[in-house]
Image (cartoon, rainbow over all chains, first blue to last red):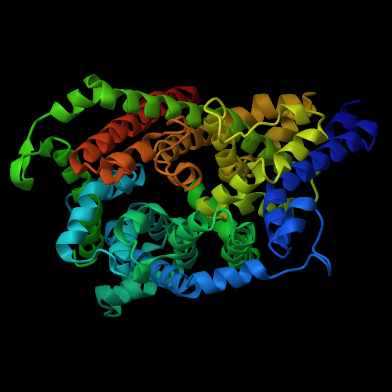
Length: 285
Length: 295
């Protein structure tokens, strides 16, 4: 009796449970992916087929790239992609650099106000930077940075710092003291010690990077407010405006949605393991 | 100190200062000759007493609480349910399921908004076919076009996208529970249902609180989905207006209504108060109760 409870027998109940669990997961997976798949397959069809047989794969009769032709002719997506890439990459690099330096200071040196400083830098974890938008726009106007990528980079860096410092200082405190003291005895400068610690917290740096990458790439608010000109548009803002203009051209809408999604889906397929591990680790800390 | 300076500088200049300055601006009003005059809490008073403002404010607050309620009571339970299934020992290909289920969360809200606009469009008829599958085709409506259904429909679209987040957080917590505890309960004759609710769920209560407060903050800061699908006017007839869209409209103006930065800052001030209240409630009420339980 007890044995059956410790190790559930492979009876009908057990297989029922296995079946039920997987059926529920499969059903939800279908629900989560169906809209995405539907958009992608219909982007390769001619207009009538989109409406007549939305669930069919494109065949020789219905295959058409007219939507893609409209998108490539009517917008400069490759240029927007470049903008998004620059903003995301530079912001991430800055966040990692300045946050790791600050975290190193907080973890390594016992000075007066250390705890206070850590608290000050942590306030921003819970308060959305969006609430300061009115003032941020004024600052950017005063600095002459509106409609430049720098406006976005500075805001995203400020936004990323609080959580990054918090996560990195947790990890840096775990680096053994002896290691740093040994380096000091060998005459290493404080900068050298920071350089020694950095590779030791590489997983934490990865976590911080994945935490910030998606929100920065996907943000609509700040590009809309700070950098809506043609030369500073990010891909998300570009897609938003393009989709708004072509809203009745189903081929163009489906094609541009696919163009904007597929690179992300491919990147996600490659890096999903690191991404999910990073997100869960950061969340547990 | 050299190490602390860059981060502190950028963070102070572009986050803390704007937040404080925005609160300061919310106490000013446009005066003559493009100057701004100090009015104290005048804007806040006006916002709650002047019917042309207060109707929009309370409408946005109410809608935002509906938006939050759908996330709290639909998204988070589904996330917990999926996490429980994924953490089960009998589940095969858990990593594959986890990856695919998280996919909508990495997509941009703009894309998700447009995808669902197409799916729900009466022109395409996908939602009618889907309802037809369960024999309810007659119930189909222009979900985003009706005042009565638009807000809840968009809340569900948002749930569809973000459910991966609570799922991952709950999954991390569930996987962290020591096997011995579960085994001990099994030996004592508990079934899977009892093990989950009596053993596992109490152990992940801290995560439940974190998920709750994160949901609250992000919901009261939401903007993209409504803006993408219903424009800044949050139609039909402001039925989908939430704090984020109300803030944007007030600050930037829309159509015939000119933008008003100081009133915009006032709306941000209200958002700040609501979010602060939520976070403090979590920190003091929820966490303190958890500590008592642990003792």
